[in-house]
Figure 1: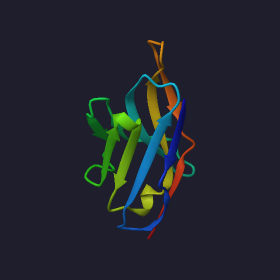
Figure 2: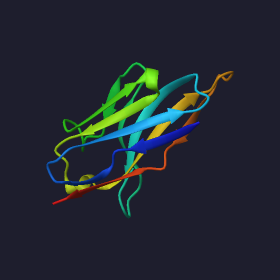
Figure 3: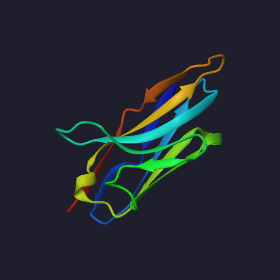
Figure 4: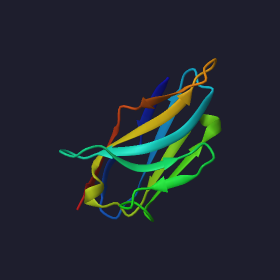
Amino acid sequence: VQVVESGGGLVQAGGSLRLSCAASGSIFKINNMGWYRQAPGKQRELVAIITSDSITNYADSVKGRFTISRDNAKNSMYLQMNSLKPEDTAVYYCNAYVIGYGGSSQWSYWGQGTQVNVSS
């Protein structure tokens, strides 16, 4: 299973970006998916998660500004980021809990990350 993020870049404060995450490979079902981020010198932190039934949860720091969504038919997840702030600058990672064909357990997969830079 591979997980690939895209959509990062450089944006001015107040601007918007949309991140995408696509999972591929031997996938029977994807349970929870999530976006995490890691800023320089800081630990990786949860940004938002979404269940297979599209129940969502957000970090307090992004509530009202970011929206997580997913397309189960495409094994994909998205993060719409609005009103970006310089403190949102980080590498954003996609995480997916995948059940493969013939299996019953879920396994956690991470993408390589996509850089988001927000200038003041």
